[in-house]
Amino acid sequence: MKVDIRHIAKLSRLQVKEEEIQKFEQEMEQIVSMVENLPQLDDTGALIDVNHPMVMREDVAQHHFKREELLKNAPQIKAGCVVVPKIVD
Image (tube, rainbow, N blue to C red; front, top):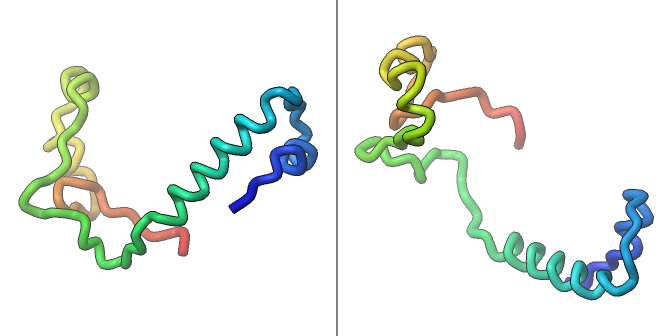
């Protein structure tokens, strides 16, 4: 997919140097190509593995609260994560 950086810059009111336009166009085309090739996912939560819950980062886990304490306050938990309502379709 061809990306027109001049047009995007104009719409977003950004100043882009002429020598950077080709580089930005190539980078944006790579990003769009990557997104187009992402697999389609359903909303069943199949990617959540109940047997292998997510773990907190060490720099977060070592400071304030234990994960178990935090999850006690959550109304619903699945695979060690807080379940929140879907707000984007």
